[in-house]
Image (tube, rainbow, N blue to C red; front, side, top):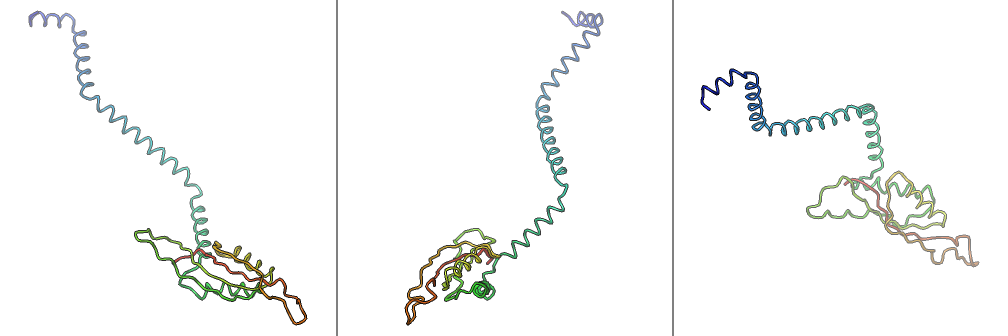
Length: 195
């Protein structure tokens, strides 16, 4: 087929030739732009996920101011329940106040030294502040003291607790006296605090 025959065929069927040429050009364009479709699909999915997150955030912003106030009130309450390791007088005053309220006799109360942090350990906001106590009193007084420590204003964890009957308690010259239920309690308690 010569160029003149091809030109005669184009003139005879111009619409079919134009459609064929257009289909060929579209095929070439699709071949070279096929990666753009994948890229456009990926961008669409990213934008769709982002719009879903924004819609979800917008839906959850209702009542956000009240929730912030509740969290701040909870943080203040938490702060008020913490002991400060360096504030020895106030820390011990808690136990002396309980001594007066329950009627036990504090033989020994002391704040133990803080444990040394491990090397390369992350800094913590809260630490356990340990106290060692020895007290004497009746069975009811000792348990009232322990219960008051446990249900008091601080976060508490008992480490060791030994309760024993006080030797020779209640003996008088006439024999057995009124103080037979005298107990001795030795325990270590940790209060949640800040360094």
